[in-house]
Image (cartoon, rainbow, N blue to C red; front, side):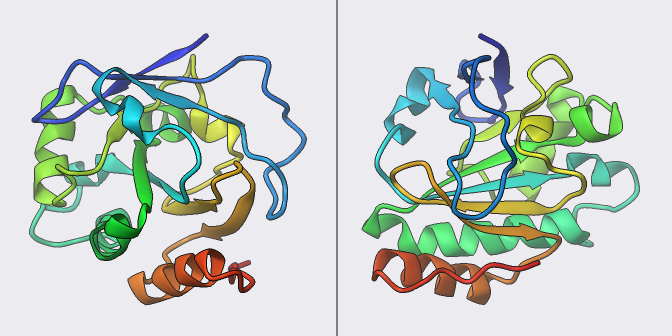
Length: 186
């Protein structure tokens, strides 16, 4: 089972794993998503809760200073805002640094940890994808940012390829949790 490294200035000994035998029948709204598990201290993120999974490009640090947000930085802010607003209701979030898989550019851990702090993601698990695990590939992520809304049964209820605002994310989460249809973007 492939392992992904969890990166956080607060908890550095976590990993992410997912079964290699998971189905690869397309990642479309209404279908089950490929499961993955946070292990170690973040095991509490497992099972039964609505989850936002955000694939971001942490390499923006090479071209965009932390104080000037790019697309992934803006998406990190939106995900953080929705998570903070709805976490008491059980919403969970995971951020994946897709840079190594999509661009072939590994983010040094120190640089990634600095970006986690600059983007205010210290309270959200952040994992670094890599070519062997290929989480971004298994979720069919072609560009960043890319955000998934997954219900407690592991069914994809929303997918946004490109930036999605905090208001739209929050409305989709609330709609899902109240039994209304979750909105999705093309």
